[in-house]
Image 1 (cartoon, rainbow, N blue to C red):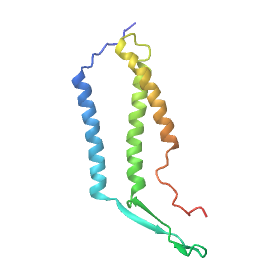
Image 2 (cartoon, rainbow, N blue to C red):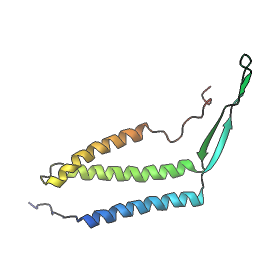
Image 3 (cartoon, rainbow, N blue to C red):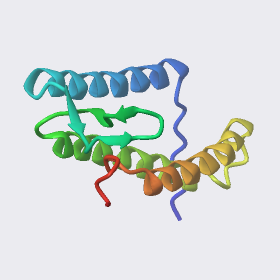
Image 4 (cartoon, helix red, strand yellow):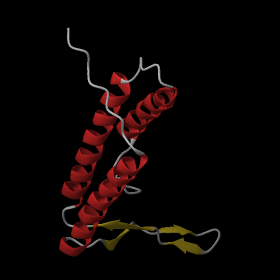
Length: 133
């Protein structure tokens, strides 16, 4: 039976991987801002007049958007989701590793569960005030 090969990963290799991931993020976000810049939009709602207090309320909501916002956020979520799945796989594969530094992955597994939970409950766009009425 073949024993799995043991690979030692040096600290500088981990730093290079983190820098590479940050560069991918920077490239995607920079491309988004160059090709499809974010702009502000305001939505106004019917005014409400309070005769007793002699005031008029003009409600509005200002939010940031872009023409292809769903495409860009989908691209980012897809990339981050793949990265999360890959890190979860690595944490699972090293769960029984007797080495002390691998015990750190127990906390990483918990972090992965929390990330998946928060991503499942996060909405990319909120419903503007008054839309549901």
